Image (tube, rainbow, N blue to C red; front, side):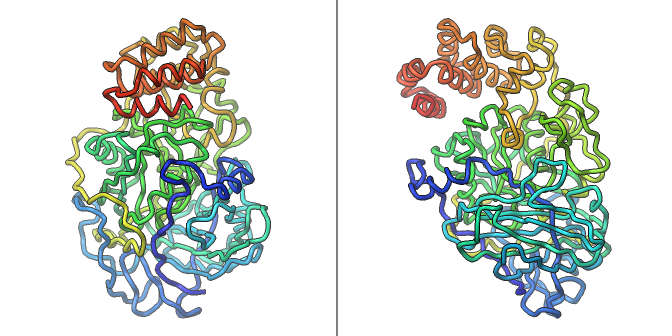
Length: 597
Protein backbone atom coordinates (compact mmCIF):
# COMPACT_ATOMS: atom_id res chain seq x y z
CA UNK A 1 0.00 0.00 0.00
CA UNK A 2 1.13 3.52 -0.75
CA UNK A 3 -0.43 6.76 0.30
CA UNK A 4 -0.37 9.76 -1.95
CA UNK A 5 -2.26 12.68 -3.34
CA UNK A 6 -4.23 11.75 -6.45
CA UNK A 7 -4.09 14.45 -9.10
CA UNK A 8 -7.33 15.63 -10.59
CA UNK A 9 -8.15 13.87 -13.82
CA UNK A 10 -6.98 15.50 -17.01
CA UNK A 11 -9.24 13.31 -19.11
CA UNK A 12 -11.11 14.76 -22.00
CA UNK A 13 -14.76 14.08 -22.69
CA UNK A 14 -15.73 11.04 -24.78
CA UNK A 15 -17.38 13.16 -27.47
CA UNK A 16 -15.97 15.04 -30.37
CA UNK A 17 -16.77 18.73 -30.63
CA UNK A 18 -19.95 17.92 -32.54
CA UNK A 19 -21.14 15.81 -29.62
CA UNK A 20 -20.83 12.36 -31.24
CA UNK A 21 -19.13 9.34 -29.74
CA UNK A 22 -15.85 8.03 -31.06
CA UNK A 23 -16.59 4.86 -33.07
CA UNK A 24 -14.58 2.51 -30.86
CA UNK A 25 -15.93 3.94 -27.63
CA UNK A 26 -19.47 3.98 -29.01
CA UNK A 27 -19.14 0.27 -29.69
CA UNK A 28 -17.92 -0.32 -26.14
CA UNK A 29 -20.81 1.78 -24.87
CA UNK A 30 -23.28 -0.31 -26.83
CA UNK A 31 -21.82 -3.55 -25.45
CA UNK A 32 -22.02 -2.30 -21.91
CA UNK A 33 -25.49 -0.80 -22.17
CA UNK A 34 -26.68 2.70 -21.49
CA UNK A 35 -26.98 3.84 -17.90
CA UNK A 36 -25.13 1.83 -15.27
CA UNK A 37 -26.81 2.37 -11.89
CA UNK A 38 -23.55 2.07 -10.00
CA UNK A 39 -24.27 2.73 -6.36
CA UNK A 40 -22.19 1.44 -3.53
CA UNK A 41 -21.56 0.53 0.03
CA UNK A 42 -18.23 -0.19 1.37
CA UNK A 43 -15.16 0.38 2.62
CA UNK A 44 -12.41 1.28 4.76
CA UNK A 45 -9.70 3.25 6.14
CA UNK A 46 -6.22 2.08 5.62
CA UNK A 47 -3.40 0.64 7.66
CA UNK A 48 -1.45 3.37 9.36
CA UNK A 49 1.37 4.81 7.30
CA UNK A 50 3.89 3.68 9.86
CA UNK A 51 2.76 0.12 9.32
CA UNK A 52 2.95 0.05 5.54
CA UNK A 53 5.11 2.98 4.50
CA UNK A 54 4.35 5.74 2.06
CA UNK A 55 2.98 9.23 2.44
CA UNK A 56 -0.37 10.35 3.74
CA UNK A 57 -1.95 13.35 2.07
CA UNK A 58 -5.07 14.72 3.61
CA UNK A 59 -7.74 17.37 3.35
CA UNK A 60 -5.50 20.43 3.26
CA UNK A 61 -2.74 18.85 5.37
CA UNK A 62 0.27 16.61 5.14
CA UNK A 63 1.16 14.91 8.45
CA UNK A 64 4.86 14.94 9.22
CA UNK A 65 4.78 11.80 11.31
CA UNK A 66 3.01 9.58 8.78
CA UNK A 67 0.23 8.51 11.10
CA UNK A 68 -2.55 9.78 8.90
CA UNK A 69 -4.58 10.66 11.91
CA UNK A 70 -3.69 11.48 15.47
CA UNK A 71 -0.05 12.52 15.23
CA UNK A 72 1.33 16.05 15.05
CA UNK A 73 0.81 17.71 11.70
CA UNK A 74 1.88 20.73 9.75
CA UNK A 75 -0.05 22.39 7.00
CA UNK A 76 2.01 22.15 3.83
CA UNK A 77 -0.68 22.23 1.15
CA UNK A 78 -1.78 25.61 -0.05
CA UNK A 79 -5.48 26.23 -0.49
CA UNK A 80 -6.80 25.34 -3.93
CA UNK A 81 -8.13 28.10 -6.13
CA UNK A 82 -11.70 27.32 -5.23
CA UNK A 83 -13.27 30.70 -4.85
CA UNK A 84 -14.02 33.18 -2.16
CA UNK A 85 -16.95 33.90 0.05
CA UNK A 86 -16.04 31.54 2.88
CA UNK A 87 -17.92 33.48 5.50
CA UNK A 88 -20.58 32.09 7.80
CA UNK A 89 -20.83 30.66 11.27
CA UNK A 90 -19.47 27.23 10.44
CA UNK A 91 -15.74 26.66 10.50
CA UNK A 92 -14.32 30.07 11.33
CA UNK A 93 -11.95 28.82 14.05
CA UNK A 94 -8.29 27.87 13.74
CA UNK A 95 -6.75 25.25 11.47
CA UNK A 96 -7.56 21.63 12.36
CA UNK A 97 -4.96 19.94 14.59
CA UNK A 98 -5.46 16.64 12.71
CA UNK A 99 -6.37 16.04 9.07
CA UNK A 100 -10.12 15.66 8.56
CA UNK A 101 -9.79 13.59 5.36
CA UNK A 102 -7.06 11.01 4.73
CA UNK A 103 -6.45 9.21 1.46
CA UNK A 104 -4.60 5.91 1.18
CA UNK A 105 -3.80 3.96 -1.97
CA UNK A 106 -3.48 0.19 -2.18
CA UNK A 107 -1.84 -0.04 -5.58
CA UNK A 108 -3.00 -2.18 -8.48
CA UNK A 109 -6.33 -3.92 -8.06
CA UNK A 110 -6.44 -7.69 -8.34
CA UNK A 111 -10.02 -8.56 -9.20
CA UNK A 112 -11.58 -10.75 -6.55
CA UNK A 113 -8.80 -10.30 -3.98
CA UNK A 114 -9.91 -8.83 -0.65
CA UNK A 115 -7.88 -5.94 0.78
CA UNK A 116 -7.63 -5.39 4.54
CA UNK A 117 -8.44 -1.82 5.57
CA UNK A 118 -7.98 -0.78 9.19
CA UNK A 119 -10.42 1.81 10.54
CA UNK A 120 -9.07 3.50 13.68
CA UNK A 121 -11.20 5.11 16.40
CA UNK A 122 -12.47 8.60 15.57
CA UNK A 123 -13.55 7.67 12.03
CA UNK A 124 -16.90 8.99 10.80
CA UNK A 125 -16.89 7.18 7.47
CA UNK A 126 -14.85 5.69 4.67
CA UNK A 127 -15.18 5.83 0.88
CA UNK A 128 -13.56 3.29 -1.44
CA UNK A 129 -12.80 4.16 -5.07
CA UNK A 130 -11.79 1.56 -7.69
CA UNK A 131 -10.61 3.10 -10.94
CA UNK A 132 -9.18 1.91 -14.25
CA UNK A 133 -6.03 3.93 -14.95
CA UNK A 134 -6.61 5.13 -18.50
CA UNK A 135 -6.69 8.48 -20.23
CA UNK A 136 -9.26 9.40 -21.39
CA UNK A 137 -11.40 7.66 -18.76
CA UNK A 138 -12.25 4.05 -19.51
CA UNK A 139 -15.79 2.99 -20.34
CA UNK A 140 -15.16 -0.57 -19.13
CA UNK A 141 -16.92 -1.45 -15.85
CA UNK A 142 -15.17 -1.60 -12.50
CA UNK A 143 -16.46 -1.31 -8.97
CA UNK A 144 -16.65 -2.59 -5.41
CA UNK A 145 -17.79 -6.21 -5.32
CA UNK A 146 -17.80 -7.09 -1.62
CA UNK A 147 -17.29 -5.40 1.74
CA UNK A 148 -17.14 -7.20 5.06
CA UNK A 149 -17.15 -5.41 8.42
CA UNK A 150 -14.98 -6.13 11.48
CA UNK A 151 -17.69 -8.36 12.95
CA UNK A 152 -17.77 -10.53 9.84
CA UNK A 153 -21.04 -9.03 8.63
CA UNK A 154 -21.28 -8.64 4.86
CA UNK A 155 -22.18 -5.08 3.93
CA UNK A 156 -21.91 -5.43 0.15
CA UNK A 157 -22.50 -8.66 -1.75
CA UNK A 158 -21.77 -9.08 -5.45
CA UNK A 159 -21.85 -5.32 -6.16
CA UNK A 160 -25.10 -4.74 -4.29
CA UNK A 161 -26.84 -4.30 -0.95
CA UNK A 162 -29.66 -6.82 -0.51
CA UNK A 163 -33.07 -5.21 -0.83
CA UNK A 164 -31.86 -2.23 -2.85
CA UNK A 165 -31.61 -1.66 -6.59
CA UNK A 166 -27.94 -0.66 -6.28
CA UNK A 167 -25.22 -1.97 -8.56
CA UNK A 168 -21.85 -0.75 -7.32
CA UNK A 169 -19.90 -0.50 -10.56
CA UNK A 170 -19.70 2.00 -13.38
CA UNK A 171 -17.69 2.93 -16.47
CA UNK A 172 -14.02 3.24 -15.52
CA UNK A 173 -14.65 4.00 -11.84
CA UNK A 174 -16.76 2.57 -9.04
CA UNK A 175 -17.35 3.68 -5.48
CA UNK A 176 -18.71 2.44 -2.18
CA UNK A 177 -18.96 3.91 1.30
CA UNK A 178 -19.45 2.95 4.91
CA UNK A 179 -21.91 3.85 6.34
CA UNK A 180 -24.68 3.30 3.81
CA UNK A 181 -26.76 0.87 5.84
CA UNK A 182 -28.51 1.15 9.16
CA UNK A 183 -26.26 -1.48 10.71
CA UNK A 184 -23.21 0.71 10.03
CA UNK A 185 -24.73 4.16 10.59
CA UNK A 186 -23.03 4.73 13.94
CA UNK A 187 -21.07 7.72 15.22
CA UNK A 188 -18.18 7.10 15.30
CA UNK A 189 -17.89 4.23 12.83
CA UNK A 190 -17.13 0.87 14.42
CA UNK A 191 -13.31 0.56 14.32
CA UNK A 192 -11.50 -2.55 13.15
CA UNK A 193 -10.54 -4.31 9.93
CA UNK A 194 -12.84 -3.95 6.93
CA UNK A 195 -12.28 -6.18 3.90
CA UNK A 196 -12.85 -4.63 0.47
CA UNK A 197 -12.94 -6.54 -2.81
CA UNK A 198 -12.86 -4.73 -6.14
CA UNK A 199 -13.96 -6.29 -9.41
CA UNK A 200 -14.91 -5.82 -13.03
CA UNK A 201 -18.69 -5.89 -12.68
CA UNK A 202 -18.75 -9.34 -14.23
CA UNK A 203 -17.55 -8.08 -17.61
CA UNK A 204 -14.30 -10.06 -17.73
CA UNK A 205 -10.65 -9.71 -16.65
CA UNK A 206 -9.25 -6.25 -15.97
CA UNK A 207 -7.51 -5.43 -19.24
CA UNK A 208 -5.73 -2.33 -17.92
CA UNK A 209 -4.15 -1.33 -14.60
CA UNK A 210 -6.62 -0.32 -11.91
CA UNK A 211 -6.22 1.40 -8.57
CA UNK A 212 -8.00 1.03 -5.23
CA UNK A 213 -8.05 4.11 -3.00
CA UNK A 214 -9.74 4.63 0.36
CA UNK A 215 -10.64 8.00 1.84
CA UNK A 216 -11.28 8.21 5.58
CA UNK A 217 -13.10 11.05 7.34
CA UNK A 218 -12.12 11.59 10.97
CA UNK A 219 -12.46 14.03 13.87
CA UNK A 220 -10.72 14.24 17.23
CA UNK A 221 -13.60 12.60 19.08
CA UNK A 222 -15.39 10.71 16.29
CA UNK A 223 -18.26 13.18 16.26
CA UNK A 224 -19.42 15.49 13.49
CA UNK A 225 -18.38 19.14 13.94
CA UNK A 226 -19.35 20.67 10.61
CA UNK A 227 -17.50 21.65 7.48
CA UNK A 228 -17.73 23.50 4.18
CA UNK A 229 -18.88 22.34 0.77
CA UNK A 230 -16.93 23.88 -2.09
CA UNK A 231 -18.92 23.90 -5.32
CA UNK A 232 -17.89 24.00 -8.97
CA UNK A 233 -20.96 25.12 -10.92
CA UNK A 234 -20.91 24.21 -14.62
CA UNK A 235 -23.43 25.87 -16.92
CA UNK A 236 -24.04 24.20 -20.29
CA UNK A 237 -24.56 26.91 -22.89
CA UNK A 238 -27.16 29.34 -21.54
CA UNK A 239 -29.04 26.80 -19.44
CA UNK A 240 -29.31 29.19 -16.46
CA UNK A 241 -27.85 32.51 -15.40
CA UNK A 242 -24.79 32.64 -13.16
CA UNK A 243 -26.61 34.79 -10.62
CA UNK A 244 -29.53 32.40 -10.24
CA UNK A 245 -27.23 29.37 -10.13
CA UNK A 246 -25.35 30.88 -7.18
CA UNK A 247 -28.55 31.80 -5.34
CA UNK A 248 -30.01 28.33 -5.83
CA UNK A 249 -26.85 26.62 -4.57
CA UNK A 250 -26.72 28.79 -1.47
CA UNK A 251 -30.40 28.27 -0.71
CA UNK A 252 -30.02 24.50 -1.03
CA UNK A 253 -26.74 23.88 0.76
CA UNK A 254 -26.14 26.60 3.34
CA UNK A 255 -26.77 24.88 6.67
CA UNK A 256 -27.77 21.56 5.07
CA UNK A 257 -27.09 18.71 7.56
CA UNK A 258 -24.89 21.10 9.54
CA UNK A 259 -22.63 22.08 6.64
CA UNK A 260 -21.96 25.49 5.12
CA UNK A 261 -21.13 26.62 1.60
CA UNK A 262 -17.42 27.36 1.28
CA UNK A 263 -16.84 28.65 -2.25
CA UNK A 264 -18.71 28.68 -5.51
CA UNK A 265 -16.77 28.74 -8.78
CA UNK A 266 -18.70 29.16 -12.02
CA UNK A 267 -17.54 27.42 -15.21
CA UNK A 268 -19.07 27.39 -18.68
CA UNK A 269 -19.16 24.38 -20.98
CA UNK A 270 -20.33 24.09 -24.57
CA UNK A 271 -23.96 24.31 -25.61
CA UNK A 272 -23.65 20.81 -27.09
CA UNK A 273 -24.03 19.56 -23.50
CA UNK A 274 -27.28 21.42 -22.85
CA UNK A 275 -29.38 18.32 -23.60
CA UNK A 276 -28.37 15.09 -21.86
CA UNK A 277 -29.62 11.52 -22.07
CA UNK A 278 -28.31 8.32 -20.48
CA UNK A 279 -25.67 7.94 -23.20
CA UNK A 280 -24.30 11.46 -22.80
CA UNK A 281 -24.40 11.55 -19.00
CA UNK A 282 -20.88 10.10 -18.52
CA UNK A 283 -19.52 12.46 -21.16
CA UNK A 284 -20.88 15.61 -19.58
CA UNK A 285 -19.40 14.52 -16.24
CA UNK A 286 -15.98 14.26 -17.93
CA UNK A 287 -16.22 18.00 -18.62
CA UNK A 288 -15.41 18.62 -14.95
CA UNK A 289 -11.76 17.69 -15.57
CA UNK A 290 -9.41 20.31 -14.17
CA UNK A 291 -12.01 21.82 -11.84
CA UNK A 292 -10.74 23.66 -8.79
CA UNK A 293 -10.15 22.28 -5.34
CA UNK A 294 -10.93 18.96 -3.66
CA UNK A 295 -13.14 17.75 -2.19
CA UNK A 296 -15.76 19.65 -4.15
CA UNK A 297 -19.25 19.11 -5.46
CA UNK A 298 -19.53 19.58 -9.22
CA UNK A 299 -23.04 20.70 -10.22
CA UNK A 300 -23.77 20.75 -13.95
CA UNK A 301 -26.84 22.71 -15.09
CA UNK A 302 -28.35 21.63 -18.42
CA UNK A 303 -31.43 22.79 -20.31
CA UNK A 304 -33.19 19.44 -20.55
CA UNK A 305 -32.99 15.66 -20.21
CA UNK A 306 -34.14 13.31 -22.96
CA UNK A 307 -34.03 9.61 -23.83
CA UNK A 308 -34.57 7.41 -20.78
CA UNK A 309 -33.98 10.47 -18.62
CA UNK A 310 -36.83 12.48 -20.20
CA UNK A 311 -38.94 14.09 -17.52
CA UNK A 312 -36.13 14.01 -14.96
CA UNK A 313 -34.92 17.11 -13.17
CA UNK A 314 -31.66 15.62 -11.92
CA UNK A 315 -29.28 12.71 -12.44
CA UNK A 316 -26.49 11.40 -10.23
CA UNK A 317 -24.44 8.52 -11.68
CA UNK A 318 -23.73 6.69 -8.43
CA UNK A 319 -24.39 6.72 -4.72
CA UNK A 320 -21.88 7.69 -3.56
CA UNK A 321 -20.21 9.54 -6.38
CA UNK A 322 -16.75 11.17 -6.33
CA UNK A 323 -16.01 14.55 -4.74
CA UNK A 324 -12.25 13.99 -4.50
CA UNK A 325 -11.41 13.66 -8.20
CA UNK A 326 -12.72 15.60 -11.17
CA UNK A 327 -13.25 14.52 -14.76
CA UNK A 328 -14.44 10.95 -14.09
CA UNK A 329 -17.78 9.37 -14.92
CA UNK A 330 -18.84 9.84 -11.30
CA UNK A 331 -17.62 13.41 -10.76
CA UNK A 332 -20.80 15.36 -10.11
CA UNK A 333 -24.53 15.77 -10.36
CA UNK A 334 -26.48 16.99 -13.41
CA UNK A 335 -29.62 19.08 -12.94
CA UNK A 336 -32.21 21.15 -14.73
CA UNK A 337 -33.16 24.23 -12.71
CA UNK A 338 -36.54 25.90 -13.19
CA UNK A 339 -35.97 29.25 -11.40
CA UNK A 340 -38.49 28.10 -8.80
CA UNK A 341 -36.48 28.34 -5.55
CA UNK A 342 -38.58 25.81 -3.62
CA UNK A 343 -38.46 23.13 -6.29
CA UNK A 344 -34.83 23.77 -7.21
CA UNK A 345 -33.80 23.39 -3.56
CA UNK A 346 -35.34 19.92 -3.47
CA UNK A 347 -33.69 18.94 -6.77
CA UNK A 348 -30.25 20.00 -5.55
CA UNK A 349 -30.59 18.45 -2.09
CA UNK A 350 -32.05 15.18 -3.37
CA UNK A 351 -29.25 14.73 -5.88
CA UNK A 352 -26.61 15.64 -3.29
CA UNK A 353 -28.16 12.94 -1.09
CA UNK A 354 -27.47 10.36 -3.81
CA UNK A 355 -24.00 11.83 -4.37
CA UNK A 356 -23.17 11.35 -0.67
CA UNK A 357 -24.50 7.78 -0.61
CA UNK A 358 -28.26 7.87 0.04
CA UNK A 359 -30.84 5.78 -1.83
CA UNK A 360 -34.55 6.44 -2.28
CA UNK A 361 -36.44 5.60 0.90
CA UNK A 362 -38.69 3.40 -1.25
CA UNK A 363 -38.38 2.75 -4.96
CA UNK A 364 -41.16 2.95 -7.54
CA UNK A 365 -40.46 -0.74 -8.15
CA UNK A 366 -42.22 -2.66 -5.38
CA UNK A 367 -40.06 -4.55 -2.91
CA UNK A 368 -37.02 -2.27 -3.06
CA UNK A 369 -36.07 0.33 -0.45
CA UNK A 370 -33.07 1.86 1.27
CA UNK A 371 -31.16 -0.25 3.84
CA UNK A 372 -31.69 2.13 6.78
CA UNK A 373 -33.39 1.28 10.07
CA UNK A 374 -35.07 4.63 10.70
CA UNK A 375 -36.75 5.36 7.34
CA UNK A 376 -40.29 4.26 6.57
CA UNK A 377 -41.16 2.16 3.53
CA UNK A 378 -44.15 2.23 1.21
CA UNK A 379 -45.84 -0.91 -0.08
CA UNK A 380 -46.68 0.60 -3.47
CA UNK A 381 -45.33 4.05 -4.25
CA UNK A 382 -47.23 4.68 -7.47
CA UNK A 383 -50.65 3.72 -6.06
CA UNK A 384 -50.23 5.52 -2.72
CA UNK A 385 -47.83 8.44 -3.33
CA UNK A 386 -48.77 11.10 -0.75
CA UNK A 387 -50.30 8.35 1.38
CA UNK A 388 -46.89 6.70 1.75
CA UNK A 389 -45.38 6.91 5.25
CA UNK A 390 -42.11 8.18 3.79
CA UNK A 391 -43.73 10.83 1.58
CA UNK A 392 -42.30 13.64 3.70
CA UNK A 393 -38.71 12.44 3.25
CA UNK A 394 -36.22 14.25 1.00
CA UNK A 395 -35.19 10.93 -0.58
CA UNK A 396 -38.72 9.82 -1.48
CA UNK A 397 -38.47 9.19 -5.25
CA UNK A 398 -40.56 12.28 -6.10
CA UNK A 399 -38.95 14.49 -3.45
CA UNK A 400 -42.03 13.97 -1.27
CA UNK A 401 -43.82 16.98 0.18
CA UNK A 402 -40.79 19.22 -0.49
CA UNK A 403 -40.08 19.66 3.22
CA UNK A 404 -36.52 18.21 3.04
CA UNK A 405 -37.14 15.94 6.03
CA UNK A 406 -34.25 13.57 6.81
CA UNK A 407 -33.75 10.90 9.45
CA UNK A 408 -30.73 10.70 11.79
CA UNK A 409 -29.19 7.81 9.83
CA UNK A 410 -29.58 9.65 6.53
CA UNK A 411 -27.93 12.70 8.07
CA UNK A 412 -25.08 10.57 9.45
CA UNK A 413 -24.34 9.13 6.00
CA UNK A 414 -24.02 12.58 4.41
CA UNK A 415 -21.87 13.83 7.29
CA UNK A 416 -19.59 10.77 7.02
CA UNK A 417 -19.00 11.23 3.28
CA UNK A 418 -15.93 12.65 1.52
CA UNK A 419 -18.02 15.52 0.18
CA UNK A 420 -16.71 18.48 2.19
CA UNK A 421 -13.76 20.16 3.91
CA UNK A 422 -14.11 19.04 7.49
CA UNK A 423 -13.82 20.46 10.99
CA UNK A 424 -12.43 18.13 13.64
CA UNK A 425 -13.41 19.81 16.92
CA UNK A 426 -15.91 22.22 18.43
CA UNK A 427 -15.05 25.78 17.46
CA UNK A 428 -12.46 24.69 14.93
CA UNK A 429 -11.94 25.79 11.36
CA UNK A 430 -12.42 23.89 8.12
CA UNK A 431 -9.37 22.42 6.41
CA UNK A 432 -7.96 24.08 3.31
CA UNK A 433 -8.82 22.47 -0.04
CA UNK A 434 -6.54 19.94 -1.63
CA UNK A 435 -5.01 21.28 -4.84
CA UNK A 436 -6.65 20.32 -8.09
CA UNK A 437 -3.49 18.64 -9.36
CA UNK A 438 -2.35 18.46 -12.98
CA UNK A 439 -4.87 18.73 -15.77
CA UNK A 440 -6.37 21.21 -18.13
CA UNK A 441 -8.05 23.91 -16.05
CA UNK A 442 -11.77 24.25 -16.46
CA UNK A 443 -12.88 27.66 -17.64
CA UNK A 444 -14.33 30.09 -15.16
CA UNK A 445 -13.20 32.17 -12.25
CA UNK A 446 -14.00 32.10 -8.56
CA UNK A 447 -16.92 34.25 -7.56
CA UNK A 448 -18.22 35.30 -4.19
CA UNK A 449 -21.52 33.65 -3.30
CA UNK A 450 -24.30 36.21 -2.95
CA UNK A 451 -25.43 37.14 0.52
CA UNK A 452 -28.12 34.84 1.91
CA UNK A 453 -31.61 36.20 1.47
CA UNK A 454 -32.75 34.94 4.86
CA UNK A 455 -35.76 32.83 5.66
CA UNK A 456 -36.25 29.10 5.61
CA UNK A 457 -34.87 27.34 2.52
CA UNK A 458 -37.46 24.60 2.86
CA UNK A 459 -40.13 24.65 0.20
CA UNK A 460 -43.83 24.79 0.84
CA UNK A 461 -45.83 21.77 -0.29
CA UNK A 462 -47.08 22.24 -3.87
CA UNK A 463 -50.66 23.49 -4.15
CA UNK A 464 -52.45 21.49 -6.83
CA UNK A 465 -55.96 22.69 -6.03
CA UNK A 466 -56.12 24.87 -9.13
CA UNK A 467 -53.75 23.72 -11.85
CA UNK A 468 -54.04 20.01 -11.04
CA UNK A 469 -57.73 19.88 -10.23
CA UNK A 470 -58.76 18.19 -13.48
CA UNK A 471 -56.03 15.56 -13.28
CA UNK A 472 -56.07 12.30 -11.32
CA UNK A 473 -54.39 13.19 -7.99
CA UNK A 474 -51.44 10.85 -8.49
CA UNK A 475 -50.74 12.29 -11.94
CA UNK A 476 -50.70 15.83 -10.51
CA UNK A 477 -48.25 14.74 -7.79
CA UNK A 478 -45.88 13.26 -10.37
CA UNK A 479 -46.05 16.36 -12.57
CA UNK A 480 -45.31 18.65 -9.64
CA UNK A 481 -42.68 16.54 -7.89
CA UNK A 482 -39.03 15.72 -8.44
CA UNK A 483 -37.99 12.84 -10.69
CA UNK A 484 -34.37 11.74 -10.91
CA UNK A 485 -32.20 9.51 -13.02
CA UNK A 486 -32.02 6.81 -10.34
CA UNK A 487 -35.69 6.01 -10.90
CA UNK A 488 -35.21 6.02 -14.67
CA UNK A 489 -32.20 3.70 -14.39
CA UNK A 490 -34.06 1.26 -12.17
CA UNK A 491 -37.21 0.83 -14.22
CA UNK A 492 -39.79 2.68 -16.29
CA UNK A 493 -39.21 6.31 -17.20
CA UNK A 494 -41.19 9.32 -16.03
CA UNK A 495 -43.81 9.33 -18.76
CA UNK A 496 -44.58 5.63 -18.39
CA UNK A 497 -45.19 6.18 -14.69
CA UNK A 498 -47.26 9.28 -15.40
CA UNK A 499 -49.46 7.29 -17.76
CA UNK A 500 -49.87 4.52 -15.20
CA UNK A 501 -51.02 7.18 -12.70
CA UNK A 502 -53.74 8.35 -15.07
CA UNK A 503 -51.90 11.24 -16.70
CA UNK A 504 -52.58 10.24 -20.30
CA UNK A 505 -55.38 12.57 -21.43
CA UNK A 506 -53.97 15.00 -23.99
CA UNK A 507 -56.62 17.63 -23.28
CA UNK A 508 -55.98 17.64 -19.54
CA UNK A 509 -52.23 17.77 -20.09
CA UNK A 510 -52.51 20.68 -22.52
CA UNK A 511 -54.63 22.55 -19.99
CA UNK A 512 -51.85 22.23 -17.40
CA UNK A 513 -49.30 23.36 -19.97
CA UNK A 514 -51.31 26.50 -20.68
CA UNK A 515 -51.99 27.27 -17.02
CA UNK A 516 -49.83 30.24 -15.95
CA UNK A 517 -50.51 29.35 -12.32
CA UNK A 518 -48.90 25.92 -12.63
CA UNK A 519 -45.21 25.41 -11.75
CA UNK A 520 -43.06 25.74 -14.83
CA UNK A 521 -41.64 22.20 -14.50
CA UNK A 522 -45.17 20.77 -14.28
CA UNK A 523 -46.17 22.70 -17.40
CA UNK A 524 -43.13 21.46 -19.31
CA UNK A 525 -43.71 17.83 -18.34
CA UNK A 526 -47.42 18.05 -19.15
CA UNK A 527 -46.74 19.39 -22.65
CA UNK A 528 -44.10 16.75 -23.31
CA UNK A 529 -46.54 14.08 -22.11
CA UNK A 530 -49.37 15.45 -24.30
CA UNK A 531 -47.31 14.66 -27.39
CA UNK A 532 -46.71 11.12 -26.15
CA UNK A 533 -50.37 10.39 -25.40
CA UNK A 534 -52.61 8.25 -27.57
CA UNK A 535 -54.78 11.31 -28.12
CA UNK A 536 -52.04 13.39 -29.73
CA UNK A 537 -54.16 14.44 -32.72
CA UNK A 538 -53.26 16.98 -35.37
CA UNK A 539 -55.03 19.59 -33.25
CA UNK A 540 -52.90 18.70 -30.21
CA UNK A 541 -49.72 18.88 -32.28
CA UNK A 542 -50.72 22.27 -33.69
CA UNK A 543 -51.37 23.61 -30.19
CA UNK A 544 -48.01 22.31 -28.98
CA UNK A 545 -46.34 24.01 -31.94
CA UNK A 546 -48.05 27.29 -31.09
CA UNK A 547 -46.86 27.09 -27.49
CA UNK A 548 -43.32 26.28 -28.61
CA UNK A 549 -43.29 29.32 -30.90
CA UNK A 550 -44.57 31.82 -28.33
CA UNK A 551 -41.56 33.87 -27.08
CA UNK A 552 -43.64 35.28 -24.21
CA UNK A 553 -43.79 31.90 -22.47
CA UNK A 554 -41.14 30.57 -20.07
CA UNK A 555 -38.27 28.74 -21.71
CA UNK A 556 -38.96 25.42 -19.96
CA UNK A 557 -42.60 25.51 -21.06
CA UNK A 558 -41.53 25.97 -24.67
CA UNK A 559 -38.96 23.18 -24.37
CA UNK A 560 -41.64 20.82 -23.05
CA UNK A 561 -43.84 21.66 -26.02
CA UNK A 562 -40.93 20.97 -28.39
CA UNK A 563 -40.46 17.54 -26.80
CA UNK A 564 -44.18 16.88 -27.18
CA UNK A 565 -44.16 17.78 -30.88
CA UNK A 566 -41.12 15.58 -31.52
CA UNK A 567 -42.77 12.61 -29.80
CA UNK A 568 -46.03 13.03 -31.71
CA UNK A 569 -44.76 13.77 -35.21
CA UNK A 570 -41.17 13.86 -36.50
CA UNK A 571 -42.38 15.76 -39.59
CA UNK A 572 -44.04 18.40 -37.43
CA UNK A 573 -40.85 18.64 -35.35
CA UNK A 574 -38.80 19.36 -38.47
CA UNK A 575 -41.25 22.04 -39.58
CA UNK A 576 -41.19 23.58 -36.11
CA UNK A 577 -37.39 23.64 -36.05
CA UNK A 578 -37.36 25.50 -39.37
CA UNK A 579 -39.68 28.17 -37.94
CA UNK A 580 -37.64 28.54 -34.74
CA UNK A 581 -34.38 29.32 -36.51
CA UNK A 582 -33.17 32.68 -35.19
CA UNK A 583 -35.60 32.53 -32.26
CA UNK A 584 -34.71 35.18 -29.63
CA UNK A 585 -33.98 32.36 -27.16
CA UNK A 586 -31.03 30.47 -28.62
CA UNK A 587 -31.61 27.57 -26.22
CA UNK A 588 -35.11 27.09 -27.66
CA UNK A 589 -33.69 27.27 -31.19
CA UNK A 590 -30.99 24.72 -30.41
CA UNK A 591 -33.31 22.28 -28.64
CA UNK A 592 -35.81 22.46 -31.51
CA UNK A 593 -33.08 21.57 -34.01
CA UNK A 594 -31.93 18.67 -31.83
CA UNK A 595 -35.49 17.36 -31.41
CA UNK A 596 -35.99 17.38 -35.19
CA UNK A 597 -33.09 15.06 -35.90
